[in-house]
Amino acid sequence: MPEISRFYGIVIKMFHNDHLPPHFHAEYGEQRMVVAIDTLAVVAGKLRPRATGLVMEWAAEHQNELRHVWEQSRRQESLDRIDPLP
Image (cartoon, rainbow, N blue to C red; front, side, top):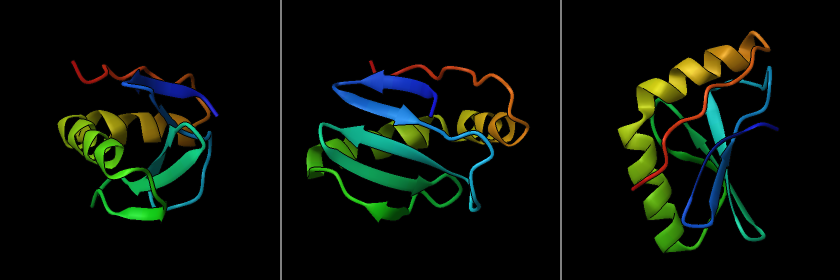
């Protein structure tokens, strides 16, 4: 699963040709979470509250880029990296 961003120990990844709805995976240590791109709803798993807040802040700032990378993943293309939180 290609990494598309990393910040504050959180790793954001996306599978190539993954199932719908469009989503990304966030990892923080041993914790995992899946977030829908369009609604920013947590689809599965959970992270610590602080990490979840950082992921949601990042995702809200990069929602259009996430949609673009999702389309790249569906076409099994190389995935663009997305800037981390500052």
